[in-house]
Image (cartoon, rainbow, N blue to C red; front, side):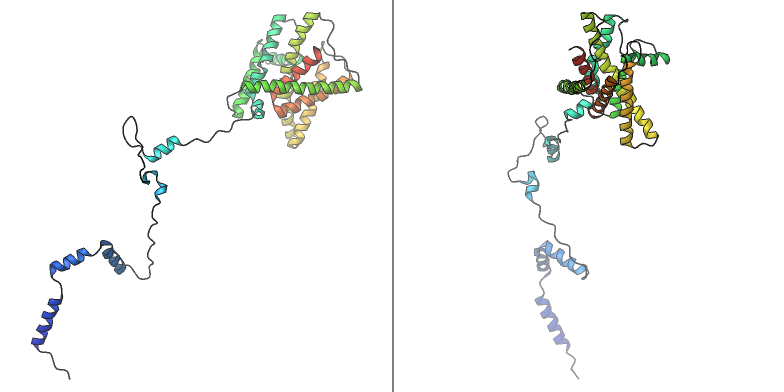
Length: 334
Protein backbone atom coordinates (compact mmCIF):
# COMPACT_ATOMS: atom_id res chain seq x y z
CA UNK A 1 0.00 0.00 0.00
CA UNK A 2 1.45 3.40 -1.12
CA UNK A 3 1.89 6.19 1.38
CA UNK A 4 -0.14 9.33 0.85
CA UNK A 5 2.16 12.27 0.05
CA UNK A 6 2.26 14.88 2.72
CA UNK A 7 0.92 18.42 2.29
CA UNK A 8 4.44 19.79 2.30
CA UNK A 9 5.47 17.77 -0.74
CA UNK A 10 2.32 18.78 -2.61
CA UNK A 11 3.03 22.47 -2.00
CA UNK A 12 6.65 22.07 -3.15
CA UNK A 13 5.56 20.46 -6.41
CA UNK A 14 3.01 23.26 -7.05
CA UNK A 15 5.61 26.01 -6.45
CA UNK A 16 8.04 24.30 -8.79
CA UNK A 17 5.37 24.05 -11.52
CA UNK A 18 4.55 27.73 -11.20
CA UNK A 19 8.20 28.69 -11.45
CA UNK A 20 8.54 26.70 -14.74
CA UNK A 21 5.40 28.35 -16.38
CA UNK A 22 6.17 31.74 -18.05
CA UNK A 23 4.58 34.80 -16.61
CA UNK A 24 1.36 36.32 -18.07
CA UNK A 25 3.14 39.00 -20.09
CA UNK A 26 5.68 36.48 -21.36
CA UNK A 27 2.87 34.15 -22.45
CA UNK A 28 1.11 36.96 -24.34
CA UNK A 29 4.37 37.93 -26.02
CA UNK A 30 5.01 34.31 -26.89
CA UNK A 31 1.61 33.92 -28.49
CA UNK A 32 1.93 37.26 -30.29
CA UNK A 33 5.32 36.28 -31.63
CA UNK A 34 3.84 33.18 -33.23
CA UNK A 35 3.14 33.79 -36.93
CA UNK A 36 -0.51 34.42 -37.73
CA UNK A 37 -0.64 31.77 -40.39
CA UNK A 38 0.75 29.21 -37.93
CA UNK A 39 -2.06 29.95 -35.49
CA UNK A 40 -4.67 29.81 -38.24
CA UNK A 41 -3.26 26.60 -39.61
CA UNK A 42 -3.23 25.07 -36.17
CA UNK A 43 -6.81 26.09 -35.52
CA UNK A 44 -7.87 24.85 -38.93
CA UNK A 45 -6.22 21.51 -38.38
CA UNK A 46 -7.81 21.23 -34.97
CA UNK A 47 -11.29 22.09 -36.21
CA UNK A 48 -11.20 20.27 -39.57
CA UNK A 49 -12.27 16.61 -39.61
CA UNK A 50 -9.39 14.32 -40.35
CA UNK A 51 -11.12 12.62 -43.26
CA UNK A 52 -11.65 15.85 -45.32
CA UNK A 53 -8.71 16.59 -47.68
CA UNK A 54 -7.14 20.01 -47.52
CA UNK A 55 -7.75 22.25 -50.59
CA UNK A 56 -4.80 23.00 -52.79
CA UNK A 57 -3.48 26.52 -52.46
CA UNK A 58 -4.33 28.86 -55.43
CA UNK A 59 -1.79 29.00 -58.21
CA UNK A 60 0.36 32.10 -58.19
CA UNK A 61 -0.79 34.77 -60.69
CA UNK A 62 1.31 35.13 -63.80
CA UNK A 63 2.38 38.76 -64.12
CA UNK A 64 2.44 38.39 -67.91
CA UNK A 65 -1.35 38.01 -67.92
CA UNK A 66 -1.84 41.60 -66.79
CA UNK A 67 -0.10 44.40 -68.58
CA UNK A 68 -0.36 46.64 -65.55
CA UNK A 69 1.40 44.00 -63.41
CA UNK A 70 4.58 44.20 -65.49
CA UNK A 71 7.39 46.04 -63.85
CA UNK A 72 7.70 49.53 -65.19
CA UNK A 73 4.36 49.42 -67.02
CA UNK A 74 3.09 52.90 -67.81
CA UNK A 75 -0.56 53.50 -66.88
CA UNK A 76 -2.83 54.69 -69.66
CA UNK A 77 -3.99 58.25 -69.02
CA UNK A 78 -6.92 59.99 -70.74
CA UNK A 79 -5.57 63.17 -72.32
CA UNK A 80 -8.78 65.13 -71.68
CA UNK A 81 -9.72 64.12 -68.14
CA UNK A 82 -6.29 63.13 -66.84
CA UNK A 83 -7.75 59.92 -65.38
CA UNK A 84 -6.29 56.48 -65.78
CA UNK A 85 -8.06 54.38 -68.43
CA UNK A 86 -8.90 50.78 -67.44
CA UNK A 87 -7.18 48.08 -69.45
CA UNK A 88 -10.50 46.59 -70.60
CA UNK A 89 -11.57 49.89 -72.14
CA UNK A 90 -8.24 50.28 -73.93
CA UNK A 91 -8.36 46.72 -75.27
CA UNK A 92 -11.93 47.21 -76.50
CA UNK A 93 -11.04 50.46 -78.23
CA UNK A 94 -7.89 49.14 -79.87
CA UNK A 95 -9.24 45.74 -80.87
CA UNK A 96 -9.58 45.23 -84.63
CA UNK A 97 -13.04 44.22 -85.81
CA UNK A 98 -13.13 41.14 -88.02
CA UNK A 99 -13.13 41.95 -91.72
CA UNK A 100 -16.52 41.69 -93.41
CA UNK A 101 -16.68 39.33 -96.34
CA UNK A 102 -16.69 41.28 -99.60
CA UNK A 103 -19.26 39.89 -102.07
CA UNK A 104 -17.72 38.52 -105.24
CA UNK A 105 -18.44 39.80 -108.74
CA UNK A 106 -20.57 36.72 -109.38
CA UNK A 107 -22.73 37.40 -106.33
CA UNK A 108 -23.09 41.15 -106.89
CA UNK A 109 -23.92 40.82 -110.58
CA UNK A 110 -26.82 38.51 -109.74
CA UNK A 111 -28.58 40.86 -107.29
CA UNK A 112 -31.84 42.44 -108.51
CA UNK A 113 -30.58 45.93 -107.64
CA UNK A 114 -27.50 45.55 -109.83
CA UNK A 115 -29.65 44.07 -112.58
CA UNK A 116 -31.96 47.09 -112.36
CA UNK A 117 -29.12 49.59 -112.62
CA UNK A 118 -27.57 47.60 -115.48
CA UNK A 119 -30.82 47.39 -117.50
CA UNK A 120 -31.95 50.95 -116.77
CA UNK A 121 -30.25 52.23 -119.97
CA UNK A 122 -32.36 49.74 -121.94
CA UNK A 123 -35.52 51.10 -120.31
CA UNK A 124 -34.58 54.71 -121.08
CA UNK A 125 -33.40 53.97 -124.61
CA UNK A 126 -36.53 52.01 -125.52
CA UNK A 127 -39.18 54.19 -123.89
CA UNK A 128 -37.42 57.42 -124.86
CA UNK A 129 -36.78 56.17 -128.39
CA UNK A 130 -40.44 55.25 -128.90
CA UNK A 131 -41.48 58.75 -127.79
CA UNK A 132 -38.89 60.39 -130.07
CA UNK A 133 -39.82 58.28 -133.10
CA UNK A 134 -43.53 58.67 -132.40
CA UNK A 135 -45.98 56.41 -130.66
CA UNK A 136 -46.92 54.96 -134.03
CA UNK A 137 -43.50 53.29 -134.18
CA UNK A 138 -43.80 49.47 -134.12
CA UNK A 139 -43.28 48.25 -130.58
CA UNK A 140 -41.80 45.03 -129.31
CA UNK A 141 -44.31 42.18 -129.13
CA UNK A 142 -43.67 41.39 -125.45
CA UNK A 143 -44.14 45.07 -124.63
CA UNK A 144 -47.48 45.09 -126.48
CA UNK A 145 -48.74 41.95 -124.71
CA UNK A 146 -47.75 43.20 -121.27
CA UNK A 147 -49.49 46.53 -121.90
CA UNK A 148 -52.59 44.74 -123.16
CA UNK A 149 -52.68 42.69 -119.97
CA UNK A 150 -52.46 45.87 -117.89
CA UNK A 151 -55.18 47.51 -120.00
CA UNK A 152 -57.43 44.50 -119.40
CA UNK A 153 -56.96 45.02 -115.67
CA UNK A 154 -57.87 48.70 -115.98
CA UNK A 155 -54.34 50.12 -115.82
CA UNK A 156 -53.64 51.96 -119.03
CA UNK A 157 -51.07 54.57 -117.97
CA UNK A 158 -48.29 54.80 -120.55
CA UNK A 159 -45.35 54.69 -118.13
CA UNK A 160 -46.92 52.09 -115.83
CA UNK A 161 -45.12 49.12 -117.40
CA UNK A 162 -41.56 50.50 -117.00
CA UNK A 163 -42.49 51.75 -113.53
CA UNK A 164 -43.74 48.28 -112.55
CA UNK A 165 -40.53 46.75 -113.93
CA UNK A 166 -38.42 49.02 -111.75
CA UNK A 167 -40.58 48.53 -108.65
CA UNK A 168 -40.68 44.77 -109.18
CA UNK A 169 -36.89 44.50 -109.26
CA UNK A 170 -36.61 46.68 -106.15
CA UNK A 171 -39.17 44.52 -104.34
CA UNK A 172 -37.32 41.37 -105.39
CA UNK A 173 -34.09 42.83 -104.04
CA UNK A 174 -35.82 43.61 -100.73
CA UNK A 175 -37.21 40.10 -100.42
CA UNK A 176 -33.78 38.60 -101.09
CA UNK A 177 -32.32 40.68 -98.19
CA UNK A 178 -29.33 41.67 -100.31
CA UNK A 179 -27.19 44.70 -99.56
CA UNK A 180 -28.39 47.95 -101.11
CA UNK A 181 -25.13 48.45 -102.93
CA UNK A 182 -23.84 48.21 -106.47
CA UNK A 183 -20.41 48.80 -107.95
CA UNK A 184 -19.61 50.60 -111.22
CA UNK A 185 -16.83 48.09 -111.77
CA UNK A 186 -19.35 45.26 -111.55
CA UNK A 187 -21.56 47.01 -114.14
CA UNK A 188 -18.62 47.24 -116.54
CA UNK A 189 -17.88 43.57 -115.97
CA UNK A 190 -21.52 42.70 -116.69
CA UNK A 191 -21.34 44.61 -119.99
CA UNK A 192 -18.25 42.64 -121.00
CA UNK A 193 -19.75 39.34 -119.89
CA UNK A 194 -22.99 40.03 -121.76
CA UNK A 195 -20.99 40.75 -124.90
CA UNK A 196 -19.14 37.46 -124.58
CA UNK A 197 -22.37 35.51 -124.14
CA UNK A 198 -23.87 37.33 -127.15
CA UNK A 199 -20.84 36.46 -129.27
CA UNK A 200 -21.23 32.82 -128.26
CA UNK A 201 -24.87 32.88 -129.37
CA UNK A 202 -23.83 34.52 -132.66
CA UNK A 203 -21.37 31.66 -133.17
CA UNK A 204 -24.20 29.17 -132.56
CA UNK A 205 -26.36 31.02 -135.11
CA UNK A 206 -23.56 30.95 -137.68
CA UNK A 207 -23.07 27.26 -137.04
CA UNK A 208 -26.74 26.54 -137.61
CA UNK A 209 -26.76 28.83 -140.64
CA UNK A 210 -24.13 26.61 -142.20
CA UNK A 211 -26.40 23.63 -141.68
CA UNK A 212 -29.77 25.28 -142.40
CA UNK A 213 -30.37 28.55 -144.24
CA UNK A 214 -31.78 31.25 -141.93
CA UNK A 215 -33.09 34.60 -143.04
CA UNK A 216 -32.33 36.82 -140.03
CA UNK A 217 -31.69 40.02 -141.99
CA UNK A 218 -33.35 43.39 -141.34
CA UNK A 219 -36.65 44.46 -142.82
CA UNK A 220 -35.88 46.31 -146.05
CA UNK A 221 -39.16 48.22 -145.99
CA UNK A 222 -37.74 50.89 -143.69
CA UNK A 223 -35.46 53.65 -144.83
CA UNK A 224 -31.75 53.54 -144.05
CA UNK A 225 -31.67 55.95 -141.07
CA UNK A 226 -35.19 55.22 -139.87
CA UNK A 227 -34.44 51.53 -140.14
CA UNK A 228 -31.32 51.84 -138.03
CA UNK A 229 -32.92 54.02 -135.34
CA UNK A 230 -36.11 51.98 -135.16
CA UNK A 231 -34.21 48.71 -134.98
CA UNK A 232 -31.86 49.96 -132.32
CA UNK A 233 -34.81 51.03 -130.19
CA UNK A 234 -36.59 47.75 -130.89
CA UNK A 235 -33.58 45.66 -129.87
CA UNK A 236 -33.38 47.50 -126.56
CA UNK A 237 -37.05 46.71 -125.99
CA UNK A 238 -36.59 43.06 -126.98
CA UNK A 239 -33.71 42.59 -124.58
CA UNK A 240 -35.70 44.19 -121.78
CA UNK A 241 -39.36 43.18 -122.07
CA UNK A 242 -38.89 39.74 -123.63
CA UNK A 243 -36.70 38.80 -120.70
CA UNK A 244 -39.21 40.32 -118.28
CA UNK A 245 -42.06 38.33 -119.81
CA UNK A 246 -40.51 34.96 -120.64
CA UNK A 247 -37.77 34.63 -118.02
CA UNK A 248 -38.60 36.92 -115.08
CA UNK A 249 -42.36 36.25 -114.98
CA UNK A 250 -43.19 33.13 -116.99
CA UNK A 251 -40.27 30.83 -116.10
CA UNK A 252 -40.83 30.86 -112.30
CA UNK A 253 -44.61 30.60 -112.79
CA UNK A 254 -44.36 27.50 -115.00
CA UNK A 255 -41.82 25.92 -112.64
CA UNK A 256 -44.19 26.53 -109.71
CA UNK A 257 -47.13 24.93 -111.57
CA UNK A 258 -45.05 21.88 -112.49
CA UNK A 259 -44.04 21.47 -108.86
CA UNK A 260 -47.72 21.53 -107.88
CA UNK A 261 -48.32 18.78 -110.44
CA UNK A 262 -45.79 16.53 -108.68
CA UNK A 263 -42.59 17.17 -110.62
CA UNK A 264 -39.30 17.16 -108.76
CA UNK A 265 -37.46 20.46 -108.32
CA UNK A 266 -34.98 19.76 -111.10
CA UNK A 267 -37.72 18.32 -113.34
CA UNK A 268 -39.88 21.40 -112.83
CA UNK A 269 -37.03 23.73 -113.75
CA UNK A 270 -36.13 21.69 -116.85
CA UNK A 271 -39.77 21.55 -117.90
CA UNK A 272 -40.19 25.29 -117.36
CA UNK A 273 -37.14 26.01 -119.52
CA UNK A 274 -38.51 23.83 -122.33
CA UNK A 275 -42.04 25.26 -122.18
CA UNK A 276 -41.04 28.91 -121.98
CA UNK A 277 -38.40 28.50 -124.71
CA UNK A 278 -41.03 27.04 -127.04
CA UNK A 279 -43.45 29.87 -126.27
CA UNK A 280 -40.64 32.40 -126.72
CA UNK A 281 -39.91 31.02 -130.19
CA UNK A 282 -43.58 30.90 -131.22
CA UNK A 283 -44.08 34.51 -130.11
CA UNK A 284 -41.91 35.70 -133.02
CA UNK A 285 -44.54 34.47 -135.52
CA UNK A 286 -47.58 36.09 -133.87
CA UNK A 287 -49.19 39.32 -134.99
CA UNK A 288 -49.08 41.42 -138.15
CA UNK A 289 -45.37 42.20 -137.67
CA UNK A 290 -44.45 38.58 -136.92
CA UNK A 291 -42.22 36.52 -139.17
CA UNK A 292 -43.53 33.82 -141.46
CA UNK A 293 -43.23 30.51 -139.67
CA UNK A 294 -40.11 28.59 -140.59
CA UNK A 295 -39.08 25.32 -138.84
CA UNK A 296 -35.39 26.16 -139.01
CA UNK A 297 -35.68 29.62 -137.50
CA UNK A 298 -38.14 28.22 -134.96
CA UNK A 299 -35.56 25.64 -133.90
CA UNK A 300 -32.86 28.23 -133.47
CA UNK A 301 -35.13 30.50 -131.43
CA UNK A 302 -35.95 27.58 -129.14
CA UNK A 303 -32.20 27.08 -128.66
CA UNK A 304 -31.83 30.81 -128.01
CA UNK A 305 -34.65 30.64 -125.45
CA UNK A 306 -32.89 27.82 -123.62
CA UNK A 307 -29.65 29.81 -123.82
CA UNK A 308 -31.24 32.92 -122.26
CA UNK A 309 -33.03 30.84 -119.62
CA UNK A 310 -29.78 29.22 -118.50
CA UNK A 311 -28.10 32.63 -118.29
CA UNK A 312 -31.06 33.96 -116.30
CA UNK A 313 -30.89 31.08 -113.81
CA UNK A 314 -27.11 31.08 -113.53
CA UNK A 315 -26.17 34.73 -113.93
CA UNK A 316 -29.30 36.74 -113.17
CA UNK A 317 -31.79 38.93 -114.99
CA UNK A 318 -29.42 41.77 -115.83
CA UNK A 319 -26.90 39.71 -117.80
CA UNK A 320 -29.70 37.77 -119.54
CA UNK A 321 -31.32 41.02 -120.72
CA UNK A 322 -27.96 42.50 -121.71
CA UNK A 323 -27.00 39.39 -123.65
CA UNK A 324 -30.34 39.39 -125.49
CA UNK A 325 -30.11 43.07 -126.48
CA UNK A 326 -26.45 42.88 -127.56
CA UNK A 327 -27.10 39.73 -129.61
CA UNK A 328 -29.97 41.40 -131.47
CA UNK A 329 -27.78 44.43 -132.15
CA UNK A 330 -24.87 42.35 -133.39
CA UNK A 331 -27.08 40.35 -135.75
CA UNK A 332 -29.59 43.00 -136.79
CA UNK A 333 -27.28 46.01 -137.23
CA UNK A 334 -24.32 44.27 -138.83
